[in-house]
Length: 219
Length: 219
Image 1 (tube, rainbow over the protein chains, first blue to last red):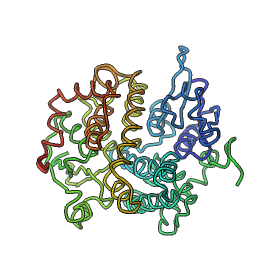
Image 2 (image 1 turned 90 degrees about the vertical axis):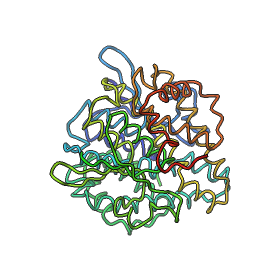
Image 3 (image 1 turned 120 degrees about the vertical axis):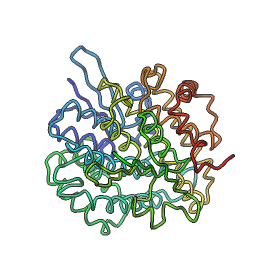
Image 4 (image 1 turned 60 degrees about the horizontal axis):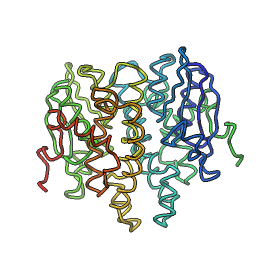
């Protein structure tokens, strides 16, 4: 995988997950910013649609040894692919059942929370339904994090599943950032906050942080 | 995995995906119906919360050789787990990049469409936002299926990825059933309809069909 490029937006939680994975595996990549809001959303531009017709972020692009340019989107499949090609350090436990649990926790964020409060859904809630998009997003974050706090009780160690970072942690950290943006009170989720602090102590999580990306807008 | 039991609801598309996977792999299982609407939703009962505190469907339950009872939820992690324990027939392509593509297409349904139109979201749209929940669901199905129709153009053979059934097809078939319920015009998606017909010719897909489950309600 030569010439790794990640099409990303600093605050996109799906982009953020892949940034964490790339940094954890020590893979160098070029950061290509795609602004989700400017000019009606750069993901809708002809240039980006040529890269990813689905207009979603992130997209990972690379060149194989034979010169083939390949692209892949959807954060969890991208991370599973990186895991297969670069198995160490692992993003999934060695034990099959624990591996399934890590994927389950990751999906509780990936399909259980994030899709309900991504930008296009919030815009639809606000513009088409004339409803409070921030309250909508806070509702689904609260509901999802409550379930996640309960679910990690039987799997956690230092991280969500035992004492090693997994896909579950990779999904958790960007989601908590989003929840704070929507004003969600995180005090009822002490386990998730403790695990977040463990993650944030690691250089790979620090490097992937939204605020540290080249397209980040200062608060 | 002895004493396989699937907690399922006939029309739940996530339950349906796991039913397809179990039938494709030739695994016998006991069907345990959980009615998502009756009595305020049986998933909220104390009995089911003891099985799955997250109150989601499906849950797969089994007993290991040493007597340990295990449970797993979230349809794609359940299917990945079945794939690891019972590799044949495969639900994912042998080639790593095609395997990633199959997972990507599956996620376009699993996180891109289904979460936006599941029962709890529809209830919230109707009851809390006083909006048209069926129009809401049709909107997200249309948007998602349009992206999926475009995405399969570069991967399809007889099925979504080449000529073998994969997780992508397992997600596609129940989603199209849902789209019809919400009145979505499927004519703009001829490739998806063709692949659906290929799938429906297979006994495993027939056995998993919503209408054939013990808790199905006749139309």
